[in-house]
Amino acid sequence: MKEAGPIGIFDSGYGGLTVFREIAKVLPQYDYLYLGDNARVPYGTRSFETVYRYTWECVQHLFSMGCRLVILACNTASAKALRSIQQNDLTQLPDLRRVLGVIRPTAELVGEYSKTRRVGILGTQGTVASQSYIIEIEKFFPDIKVEQEACPMWVPLVENNEFDSPGADYFIRKNLDSLLQKSPDIDTLVLACTHYPLLINKIRQFVSADITLISQGELVAESLYDYLQRHPEIEILCSKNGDAEFYTTESTDGFNQKAKVFLGQEVFSKHLAI
Ligand code: DGL
Image 1 (cartoon, helix red, strand yellow):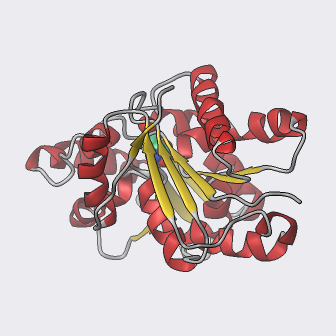
Image 2 (tube, rainbow, N blue to C red):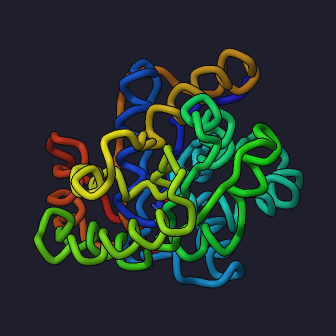
């Protein structure tokens, strides 16, 4: 008898909570285990090798805590580690486990939003350098031209609770202006980092009302719903008591305080030593 376990949700920090929130709305019946690698955030400025090593280490922890399905709710990890994990690591495991990312579900749907066929990607340096969005969007919508902008200050602003401060305005404007200058016809902006939904009100202030802003949480939740319908062999391995547990590699007090901002509810996290 194969044992079912919670669905693992992984991020380098708090950003994945924006994805967890939407997934839990659409699929409340499942159990979830969230892991934030807050001790080593940000991942966005780190090399491929390091992001892969950190991500795989965290995924293995989630597996050892009973998860059979893990969502990398982090674009940087999805861009830099997912392929190696799927193609090399998972194939060596004795039992059935799956790891999914957030880039493909976003790329699959982005074409439904853009009329001008010009899409802007806002992401970490790592996500932008990987060109993952350009490659994935091209597969589904070859007529779309993608422009990208790396926003290295945005994750630290969110992680340090400065996302709503006047100081944040400078960096947000700077990156938005730079992206929109690359193509003034952009009508769709993808918040291609799971931390960025916390900046959405600020971003909205600085771009024209005609531009659609895409947060990934809902798209990823919709895609996970479909995935579980199409893969009953995985669905049966996901336990269903409607529980959620939270782990952080950093201090639990800090995590609980910030997670409350992301989720709008009290969180009692546990520490995971790595
Ligand atoms: N939430 C991660 C992402 O979606 C943040 C990356 C970081 O740690 O820099 O890319």
